[in-house]
Image (cartoon, rainbow, N blue to C red; front, side, top):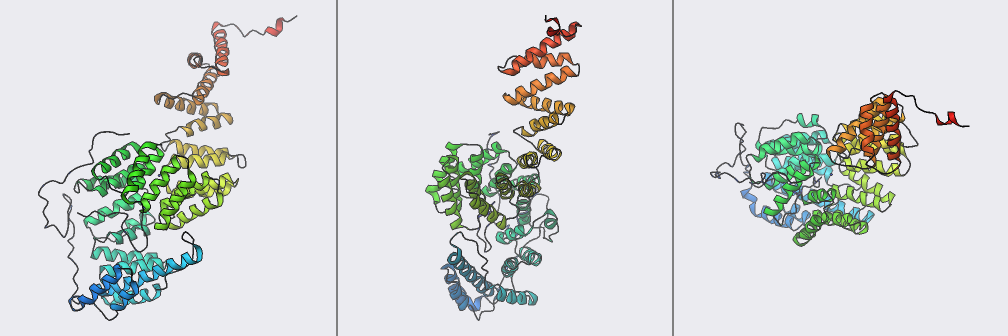
Length: 550
């Protein structure tokens, strides 16, 4: 099976996309006996799917020579020449190729005008001048039934470019129901599904390609658990599909299960050492784990394989960023964007690099370009929040932090950033900060920042019981992870004082005894508390030395 790939080119751009355990369980092989006669469908066990006949075109044979000539011109990027050859052809394939050639000619001219006006990475309001005529013609063909699934796909693209998203979805659904093997059409539907409600209301036939689409759409909508279940189910049938394995690794990365994702990506590279697809996600993972050696090896490998792929440029940029060479990193992100202006990750990550270089206007522009491409990119919204917080504009920062946390509610880092903004001097909205830290503590805060901050804020508000509760939870977490430091000492000291004040002397003595293993003023404070505990337990009142002074 030729598995669908998210890097497959589509007229409207591409959809791309922030510990080893066990063996190579994700590398499964096809069972013998898979015949070639299952052309109309590859059913999963126990699931019934509709069959899909291969589309036919009665009028193709009469104009086959002209069609092939036009296809040759199209492959040579001579789009208007290809459309001219087919100007009198009425077959469905010929109509599609002629309209597609006109669309691509308009896109090519739009790109040229953008470069002429704004430069290779500039932003322009130039539109495809062929859209109006194409919409008129394709809508007529759709009403008369003189259009095939590929023509419907192109019509959906035209409607999307004109802003008619609802009708575009309807037409694209008609296209995939007619011919479900056009993965580009599925990706265009996915880009138009901005919520789970829209996704669930699509009138799709029960074909096995729908399973691939639903899994990919769940991943795009941050519904990671659902996406993982669907991909694992698909893996049971398409057992040697590198695409599904890469998608599973991407889901694991999005769920912050970096070790599991790392294991799958390593296995993919062992079996397919010249792979570039999805390796930009792997480079993000290695960057997050600060694995400089592995990232260096990956960057060298993709450079030798295909250095002019956008993904390759992004991987090399990540390598230079991890080395602290942010100027070189920006250079390679810009190269990636010259190759694909709608490469979402490159815009977002380049914004991060501009932040490191203290180039605030360029960072804001990069993040806004990312949001324009995909308004559901929480990383770009988060980056904008950070920028405005650095600029001392907390209300703007809160707006962007809220957007990012709404899109990725299970990421503790976003809630912590919003809480810190509420906590800052210009706002001092402590109650709101506490609510955000509580959300972070309940969403897998691996660094334990939320628990410590909750304890400190409750202590600052005089809420000793709540503060003690969070200090105890934070202390338990650090003990399990075998971490020690200033936060550990602070938790011990607070709990010792709190237990003494509540009359729980044994607990207070336990915490003070542990503090004696540390140096600094906390050790002296612990000794003083222990002395007070001994006097209190002996029944003698505390001695006031000044009372006996002469």
